[in-house]
Length: 247
Image (cartoon, rainbow, N blue to C red; front, side, top):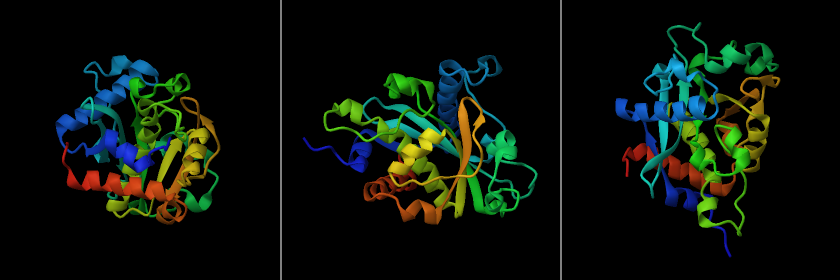
């Protein structure tokens, strides 16, 4: 039995949609409320009585949704936060929570041109798309190679986080950014590395909703070791975001 390649499997089940209207951004905030407030209790649900989780960084972000074709429901979301070039004192989310943990002076955001980078942030996948028990403790879920013995239904899930990370990367590439930062579990970074997405850890592990560290990746790092099937997936993701068509 042959395992379908990641790009084919992903595009069969999913489509990326830019959340470029108020209604679509509400869908993003609704997913984040479900995952961060109701499922994982990272945020206080009482702070969002309308059921929409949002913060001060959303206004300077580009948001993306992942549409599950078969059910016509959204299976995840992610945003790319941009710097405010008019006000260099307005930091990115990861700087607020782990600035003191950074140990790479050459990749410290305080010395970089702020127009050259952003941050992948608020990636969330609802629990019904994080099927395995160990996935339910993370807003992303597990990223692992599908097995030929897996059912068709099970094989679709590992590509969700990959597609969302590549969607955020695609937004950054399209905007002309040189690189992006991300706060993530070191375990997740190791899984991404297996597919050639080689984020570089630039800070110590801190306790922020579990073990997290600051990571960085730039254009050269992204394309240098990205596996061929992930290049195909990136092409599929970019095609979705460029067309801007929901179905």
